[in-house]
Length: 223
Image (cartoon, rainbow, N blue to C red; front, side, top):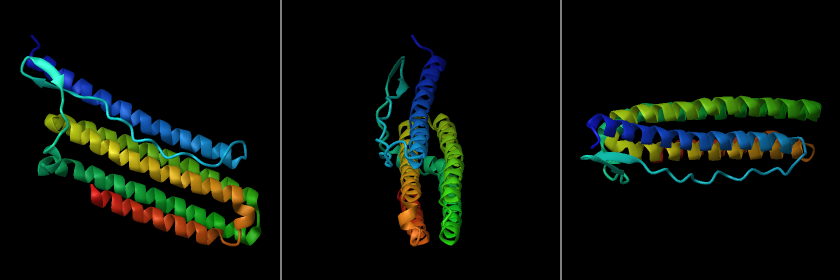
């Protein structure tokens, strides 16, 4: 018969393993998107990266009496104000960081676009946009790690809410991966079409990032 300590260990191990699987999936997608975008901007492959598929959440286990059984999906846990409060500051942090990433990407893209309009130097434009893409990847990796570290902390504090915490982390990182994929595809498209778009490139940058920022606000408000 399993002891209470053994059951708790099984629950924690299942939850942490699930978090790591999902974290790795989305980090791999961001890595892939950046690699494909980089190759596409060099003209070696096509220019479009598909959006990430929603990752199927791994099953969790929970301790019930002497046995460790599959954990059912949380129903009421997302209504628990204490659990939501425990996650709220981390969700706000993720929103702030993602907004900052978009702001930096927009500022650097606008500066590069204005420069290429003035100089018609597409080589410098490509280099500036590729550098911006590299910074974006580093910052996104940090956000994803912070989200899953927070999910691990909250899930350990509220074991019954682990399915909800895992699902929330998955939903947030899925959205982040979509945002970054869209940025990669936009940047790659701009780089590859800069000769034709040079007159309108600043307007295109502003229009794209304006819509992207709005999507972040709406998404986090919906959680």
